[in-house]
Image 1 (cartoon, rainbow, N blue to C red):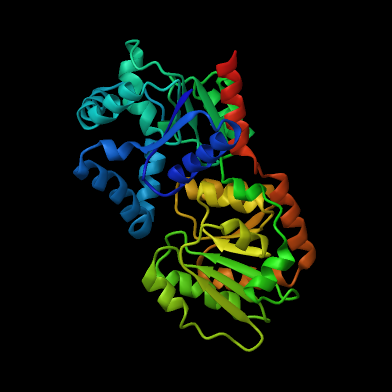
Image 2 (cartoon, rainbow, N blue to C red):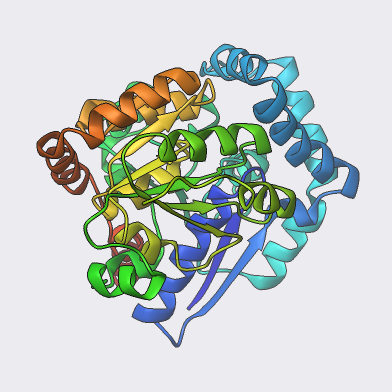
Length: 373
């Protein structure tokens, strides 16, 4: 059995979701030939740089513009001249992808980004490239771009997303509520006390996990300083691959009784989440799913208009987190939560209730079952 997983490097979440599915396939079907590719690797270099780079530039430097574009384009429309131009452009840019696809000849095509369905749609309409196509939506909402009528299956985060797809013309029998696929590490039985001892953290003090999520140096430092401002706490700060951010965070003054541990890029984020009581973070689809799976309440800081705001809505409506806007709101709501352990415990329970930690396994099992028929 040959499976092709396709993601796109427009943000990290799409690739992480595909990697989670790759893990799940390896566990359930180690003899299957499973490949994971980035569709943008098969476009021209200028196109890839513009496609991925423009997204990151907008969300980091012009989030309001990104939000306006997200909202204005979130409409399913009949094919127009503009759509035919996009299809022509895709035909030129993604000829290499289609060539790879036809050479590999997958028995199953699984995409964690809408671009795959968009590129293949004109050919599938003509009866070509009709590989079984499953689309895995990676947010707690579904933008119009994900509405690909010629896809065979959709896997989504919630009943609401399933309802929205149905309202936009996708038959409900094509859609399964699976959750968003996350790594197998979120199914492991982590020993919270042992992790804290390994990290040199107090088992009595609350531990706050602060994740950058692409935040700039100033914004991340603000969040760490806010976490350290009140009564004694342990703070775990993750700077990712941003070396300048890591160096800056290591200069933060830590008050007596508190502790700050700064990490760069980590591969065992579930371990750090297991040791924590609360996360200060952005609300990307994968990060949100990971926090929910670990029963980790979220302080969602300044969500980007568009999918992050809608993901934050899901968290707040589930009772698994609160939204904060700006540094003063962050300080106020953080101290309110830390002073109310009963509410924090209720949020932890709500997070687990809203989670789908085995989403990747659920998707793999569903696809394997269909192929076995």
